[in-house]
Image (cartoon, rainbow, N blue to C red; front, top):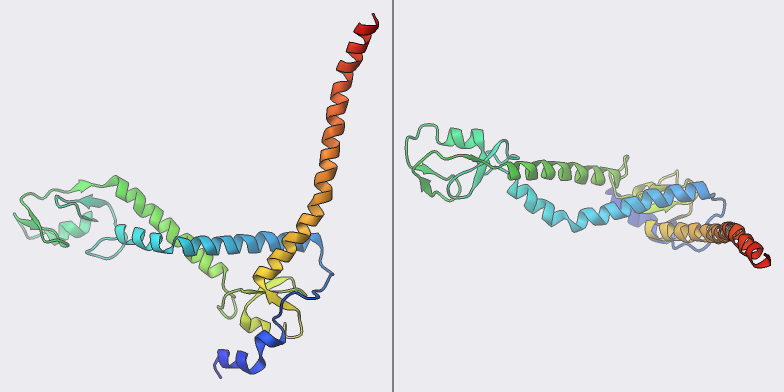
Length: 226
C-alpha cells in the first residue's frame, strides 16, 4: 500500500498529530535550548533556501558553459560577450583559421580572441559553494530513514520526526505536534526562563554602578566638611 494511503488509513492528523493541548511537562531547559537552536536554524535555513532558489538557479546558468553544460573552467570571454571554458571554445575552433563563430549567437569574429574572465571565475566558485549549502540544507531537513521532511516534533523523545515516523510503532502513542508549534512553545518557555535572569542582571548592574559612585561621593562629603 502506498505510504500516503497508509497515512490516510490510520488517520495521522486526527490520531496523534495534534495542536499542543497538554504536552508532557518533563522537559528541561537543556533540551529546550537544543530544540530551539536546531529547529530555528533549520527553519531559517529552509526559508533562506526557498527565497534564494530562483537566484541560485540564475547564478548556475550564468556560471555554466554552453558547450559542456558544466561549471565554467578557466572562463574566457569572446568578442560577442559570451563566456566559455577555455578548453571548450578552443576545441570548438580547433580546425578553423578565420571567422570564428560563437556557439551561442553564431556571431563570427576575425580573430581567435580569448580574454580571461576572472570575475566570472570568482562567481563560479560562489555558485559551487551555494550549491553545496543548498544540498546540505536539503539533506539535513529530511528524515534519514524515510527521506520525508522533518515537519513534526515528538515531545517524549525530544526529536524532529517525519509523517511516516509519527505513525510508526516508535512514536504512535507519543504526543506529536507540528514543528512550528513546538518551536514557538519552547521559545516562550525560554523567554520566561530568561526574564528573571535579565532582571537579576539589571539589579547587579545597578548595584555595581552604585558602588562605583560611592568613593566619589565620600570624597565630596569630606571636601564639604573641611
